[in-house]
Image (cartoon, rainbow, N blue to C red; front, side, top):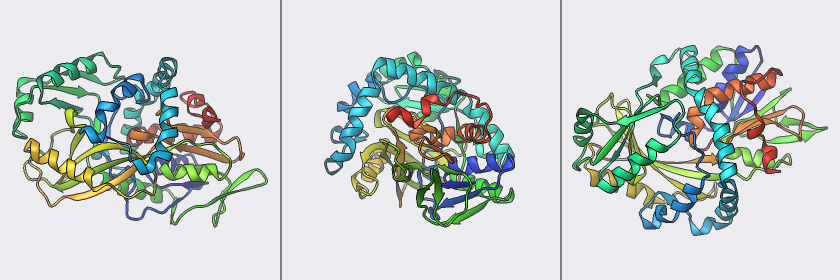
Length: 403
């Protein structure tokens, strides 16, 4: 069994298949751990059951553009990439498609936290999974009123939301120099305490069960209706390569209208950020701040671009400006990172079996939810590859929806 991609989805899938008695090798070219799996906000986002392909996203897009102070980037030089993607997103946002997306995504998220509990225990690192929820904060009165009402009306799956207590609001206000006009706290969501430690634990568990990792780029080909990985003898192939999955799958004849949805973060040494504080979302700035061991990370932006486009330094500068403007206890020098989320126009992942190669399977396109959905995706792939009944129907996630 060959898995292309050693991010969180690929590693969780490899562990599941090894435990099912398979021989598994992972091919991965991210030795420096720069993939989104290891640079995200660490948030187990069980509350995000409404796909971002929605009419609300379409309506609010203009005021959320980067040029107007928002988090959405549409670089002019990447127009050939984001314009066709945007038209497909618009089609996927139609009410009936949105309802179908909710019906598909909700059950996945309902099972994501139990799947993480199981995976964290099995890899010997239960302490990495924190289930303390998260906060959403507003500093403007109008934003607080509208934001709270919006979340209270939204479908949030297994997560629950309540107003922050006076003590919690005082604690959040003490983080910076702004009055907190409103705050809510989610329960049921969670956090990975340290993404670097998670990567190490997953890789150790995979190797400890007999798996092998090849630090190399992968190339796929077709031979008499079967997929082959160049340089590796694998009876079956699973593509879990994030944004790189598009080129791999399209080389075999699949249609994969995926875009590199780029996010940015800055990290610095923690100076006054409480170690046990759950992630805090500053919603007016579309920024989430997470404590990772001795460091604090501020992350933001949804930049629709080409995979090979250079990073935009203005994004990091704005993040650093937000941190300073709010008076948060995060001081430089900052370490800067940019990563590409693998996003399909309907904001649903691609999980299924190829119609072009009899031995080819895939699990990618998890957009903002790759960390959240990795263990449950791995369980589904294990059942699919083994020929058993999957916990959930996979038809909504089949690539044939784009054929």
